Image (cartoon, rainbow, N blue to C red; front, side, top):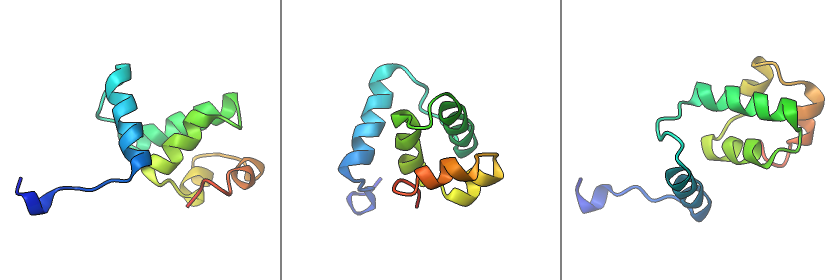
Length: 83
Protein backbone atom coordinates (compact mmCIF):
# COMPACT_ATOMS: atom_id res chain seq x y z
CA UNK A 1 0.00 0.00 0.00
CA UNK A 2 1.35 3.37 -0.97
CA UNK A 3 1.16 6.31 1.39
CA UNK A 4 -1.34 8.08 -0.82
CA UNK A 5 -3.67 5.07 -0.62
CA UNK A 6 -4.23 5.19 3.15
CA UNK A 7 -7.82 5.01 4.22
CA UNK A 8 -8.90 7.67 6.67
CA UNK A 9 -11.76 6.98 9.05
CA UNK A 10 -13.39 9.15 11.67
CA UNK A 11 -12.89 8.83 15.41
CA UNK A 12 -16.14 6.94 15.94
CA UNK A 13 -15.38 4.23 13.38
CA UNK A 14 -11.80 3.97 14.59
CA UNK A 15 -13.04 3.40 18.16
CA UNK A 16 -15.62 0.85 17.04
CA UNK A 17 -13.02 -1.08 15.04
CA UNK A 18 -10.51 -1.07 17.89
CA UNK A 19 -13.25 -2.19 20.31
CA UNK A 20 -13.97 -5.17 18.06
CA UNK A 21 -10.28 -6.01 17.79
CA UNK A 22 -9.78 -6.07 21.56
CA UNK A 23 -12.97 -7.88 22.60
CA UNK A 24 -12.35 -11.07 20.66
CA UNK A 25 -15.03 -10.75 17.99
CA UNK A 26 -14.18 -11.95 14.54
CA UNK A 27 -13.09 -9.17 12.18
CA UNK A 28 -14.96 -10.49 9.14
CA UNK A 29 -18.46 -9.18 9.85
CA UNK A 30 -20.55 -8.93 6.71
CA UNK A 31 -23.34 -6.46 6.09
CA UNK A 32 -25.94 -9.25 6.20
CA UNK A 33 -24.66 -10.43 9.58
CA UNK A 34 -24.82 -6.84 10.81
CA UNK A 35 -28.46 -6.51 9.76
CA UNK A 36 -29.35 -9.82 11.46
CA UNK A 37 -27.54 -8.77 14.64
CA UNK A 38 -29.25 -5.37 14.67
CA UNK A 39 -32.66 -7.02 14.31
CA UNK A 40 -31.89 -9.47 17.12
CA UNK A 41 -30.64 -6.69 19.42
CA UNK A 42 -33.60 -4.42 18.65
CA UNK A 43 -35.93 -7.35 19.37
CA UNK A 44 -34.44 -7.67 22.84
CA UNK A 45 -34.14 -3.96 23.56
CA UNK A 46 -35.35 -1.24 21.14
CA UNK A 47 -32.92 1.24 22.72
CA UNK A 48 -29.88 -1.04 22.29
CA UNK A 49 -26.65 0.94 22.08
CA UNK A 50 -24.87 -1.97 20.35
CA UNK A 51 -27.52 -1.97 17.60
CA UNK A 52 -27.15 1.79 17.16
CA UNK A 53 -23.36 1.43 16.88
CA UNK A 54 -23.72 -1.23 14.19
CA UNK A 55 -26.21 0.90 12.28
CA UNK A 56 -23.82 3.85 12.21
CA UNK A 57 -20.73 1.71 11.54
CA UNK A 58 -22.24 -0.06 8.51
CA UNK A 59 -24.38 2.89 7.40
CA UNK A 60 -27.55 0.81 7.39
CA UNK A 61 -30.64 2.48 5.97
CA UNK A 62 -34.24 2.39 7.10
CA UNK A 63 -35.15 0.59 3.86
CA UNK A 64 -32.75 -2.28 4.57
CA UNK A 65 -34.05 -2.71 8.10
CA UNK A 66 -37.71 -2.52 7.10
CA UNK A 67 -37.16 -5.14 4.39
CA UNK A 68 -35.65 -7.36 7.07
CA UNK A 69 -38.72 -7.10 9.29
CA UNK A 70 -38.22 -4.17 11.67
CA UNK A 71 -41.50 -2.48 12.56
CA UNK A 72 -42.34 1.10 11.60
CA UNK A 73 -42.44 2.23 15.25
CA UNK A 74 -38.91 0.98 15.90
CA UNK A 75 -37.65 2.65 12.72
CA UNK A 76 -39.21 5.95 13.83
CA UNK A 77 -37.44 5.63 17.18
CA UNK A 78 -34.12 5.22 15.33
CA UNK A 79 -34.60 8.36 13.18
CA UNK A 80 -31.55 10.10 14.63
CA UNK A 81 -29.28 7.13 13.91
CA UNK A 82 -30.44 6.03 10.49
CA UNK A 83 -28.87 7.53 7.40
